[in-house]
Length: 397
Image (cartoon, rainbow, N blue to C red):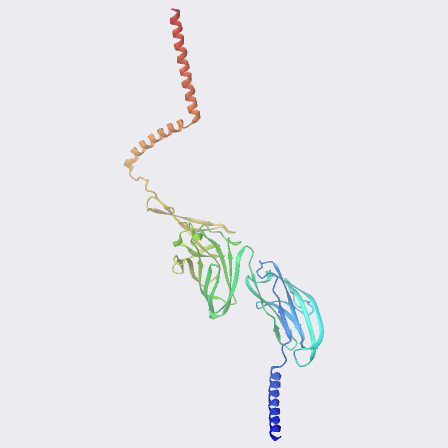
């Protein structure tokens, strides 16, 4: 009996310890989070600039949390604030919020007691003119009455400008590498600050940009940096041999568009060049702009290796017409005779060639041959008539 009572006492003590431990954990951890905010997928995750995109946004509140307002963010930019009824609290240009449904009730929540239960659903429509080119991170934040902020999940929207083929953006923490299609950039920001690099590719010359007479890859890359400034970057644009047909590969160079002078400016040695083994053109720069690859056409083959240079100007068509210096290399032939003593023989040869050519031209003319044939026939008939008359006269005598 004593042993049984001792065992029972030990079990009670163990049960009390375990129960106290569990209660302590529950008290320290507090009630489970019963507030949820969910931003669903947008109707178009890769819109063209100017398109409108829409999504539904849901709030579930199963605790005694009072929501003062809801804020919609694009990256870290506040683009709209509204209340639980879907009414705008700020000027939400380009953003439309509609309350689709709401419900209220009571029940046991995730905390320790009997509480309220609220559900809200909204439709959010955004004009993508509000968004940046490339990647945009959209989210909502719930501002509670106790000063706390509850964030929703993020949705990524990648906006491409009109007339562009693609666009993207990447965040850099001090230094790193970003790339898109044939473009690769290795960069460092000033003071190793965080930054966002935006890249847009065009297959034709962007609007309000001057043309250039040199041929190129037919690809143009607008590169921008935000939230920091650039210290240094190496830009690489790769190419295939099919893209450079007719171009002098050894003279491929990166050019940037100077919007102040309306000129394309070349990055040459030691700050630029071409790697013909790995097929990319490169430049080291401390600024971003519109970039493209140009090169002279492949020189035409000639009978001799001699060349002469003709210096002139390239006219650039723009709102303010400008010119750029250029040097045009023209191949010379070996049929030019610089000996004045040979001019007579050459003139005689030219005269003979002229006569022969004229005769050949006449004989090759169909109308001329018909005329000659007609004259010959007339002459033959005339001879026959003369001969017949003479015979008749002889018979009479």
